[in-house]
Amino acid sequence: MDVKRIPLHDIHKNLGAKMMPFAGFEMPVRYSSDKEEHFCVRDGVGVFDVSHMGEFMVRGAGALDLIQKVTSNDASKIVDDQAQYSCLPNDTGGIVDDLIVYRMGEEEYMLVVNASNIEKDWNWIQSKNTDGVEMEDVSDDIVLLAVQGPKAAETLQKLTEVDLSSVGFYKFTKGMLAGAEMIISGTGYTGSGGFELYIPKEHGITVWEKVFEAGAEFDIKPIGLGARDTLRLEKGFCLYGNDITDTTSPLEAGLGWITKFTKEFTNSENLKKQKEEGVTRKLVGFEMKEKGIPRQGYKLLNDEGEEIGEVTSGTISPCLEKGVGMGYVKKEFATVDIEIKVEVRNKQLGARVVRPPFVK
Image (cartoon, rainbow, N blue to C red):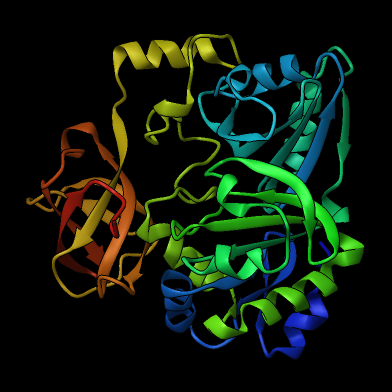
């Protein structure tokens, strides 16, 4: 399979980024160090190029009905210029993908999906599109920049007449910024505030350059996927392919808040039954009590050394300077402050179940 390149690929190469294949794309993983880039976002402002993400437009009289059928959340509750986190349940109790639904108008929506699942999600939604609702894959036409951190608004406000203070969390607007019309969205994957800019591809380079000029006084930096992972994990945000998959239920993953049984959707009857009967395992957060790095696939154990689950995501938290992670455990161990162990290189290291976010 050929690895695709994002539109600003050459810019990242010229900045000295370490480029690696990720989700079918050659992506910048880091420019300096994950730790330096992590704190750049937590304390100031950084820019992620996440143009590998997928965007589908869904239009017409049946647009909402199709979205209601394929997503777990209730999209009828959002209004124009509002976004909603949701997931695509499959027919067997797992998750096809998680996504964000943007309501552009009464009969127009944008679905933002994970890069590794673009083709999979498109085919899945089309398989449920029995009424021939108009869909368009615009993924290749958009440069998506995530400008994140406490100085993001101050940086971007220099480049637009849009009052960014009015673009709240999971709200968005269409407007001019850095000389280009785009979608300015109050979303992100870092937990440090900021915006995501959906930019027509032909304006991507210019906008990138102007954003960095505007953020120079705040020591703005480009940020790679390495820091994106430590940032999201400190906040307990799920990553598709790790913490949620085709075999994990949204209820097991703690996503009951986006699983609304006020409507019917794919596999809703079985998921409702699971909610009533209770799950047998749950996704939990944990902090290491001993020195060690939890990694995906490591075993989680009880005090007697018996396996009770496994790590789905783990890292050293730059802010806490200790190991943190998430993983599925038997439900009786899914209680805050329960002591567990993580098997790290044949050593059983102590850990404690906590409720994310790890960094408040």
